[in-house]
Length: 321
Image 1 (cartoon, one colour):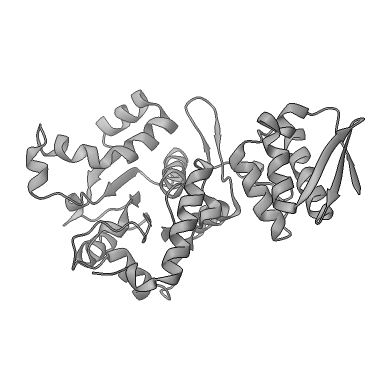
Image 2 (cartoon, helix red, strand yellow):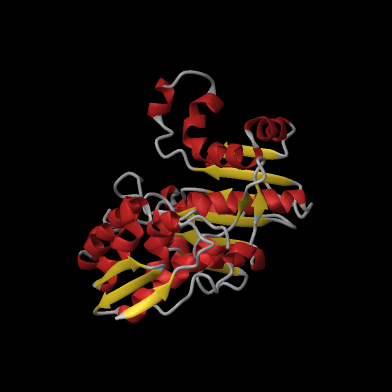
């Protein structure tokens, strides 16, 4: 039996979670029972030291004024399994920028922090990982920070319009209006960080460009922070074309998820090919985010994990033409 005193300065309701869901998560993971008695938590079961460590992490997070949501609970538990302390990583100090509402944007996982460090240190970074790991959002945050610090003169956000052939013709409006639906996730990130009015004003003055990948051909992009999103849907020709647009004083971030390739059958992904060709090129870095870095609903992590396990057993199906 192990006992752990509860810090009386923290909110016990937040520590326990809604309907004690935080305690139940620890109990299930460590195969223990946790009971509250006289200001203490009494732990009995198979892995009492791990359970005690996790609870201490929860208390440490709350004592710093951080929220303890379901995603963070899951992440703290996964770190504890590896003997890593969330509270000692001090990610709360690694602020990338602030939103227009004054909210700090910072990495929420060690993988995200490594990704941000890669972007700081290298001119070309490939951020590869599943949905919900913050690949695009963090890149946009760092682009805005670089612009505000006058490190670049322009932000360029682009992504391939996968079905940019005949189907676009059925959408209303001119060409820009036809491709805007494909670019919506990039606009969402801009609006969330800058605010809609400020983002549109910067776009009107051409400090920010949000364009389909096809518009990149023939350009040389100097003093720019350039983000290519959904890069798994580029062809090998498009990827080479994009990478060779880089000019002096620029930084390129390429994000994608190789498990969600929407190219027509028989077309090889430019991202998959680039990860093989460029992996040893000096100045280019690859950062691989994992399902543990997912910061969306907990169910997203479970879905990604199920797909990963399936493709580990059936690797030939992943890149099948």
